[in-house]
Image (cartoon, rainbow, N blue to C red; front, side, top):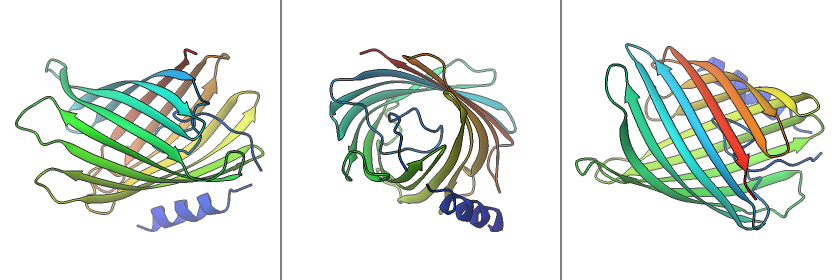
Length: 229
């Protein structure tokens, strides 16, 4: 627990004035309230590998559309492949993202909500909600989320995520991110990441990490972002 408290304090100390990015580009585990401009379309893909007793690979393709400058809609799918097993389509999840604070504010607040529709009839659908906080300025960006999840027929689960990143110059940056649950220790994770805007339309985020408490032994995460329009 002391490691998490130290990390949270470090996040709180890194705030500084603004230069904005788009939703889905900033972090791997943490959401921000930076949304696409109205009419902008993004294609996103996440590939995650988690290693513990066996390897598990997760793939999440998504489309993100800026409906207004403060409202974005998204749909993404979840695929999973366990070591030695064929890949499995798990669910489809529509989502909305809304920025509460005015455009241009250094401090940003937003909310995101998604409804996960499972492919397996034996599994229950799930609702997830995230409250999003962030501050950006100079070469620093910091963000935090309060997370709520509820699967039909099961008890709700609360958690949080936090991240801080620094631009190294040009369009490259590095950062540290944390994801944790207040209810279970199995999803706890801390990772270090590289964020690179490799062209005007393409961004690549790469992270390697490890679990805290009962989380995975090793994680590797890739995020691909293409601006289509």
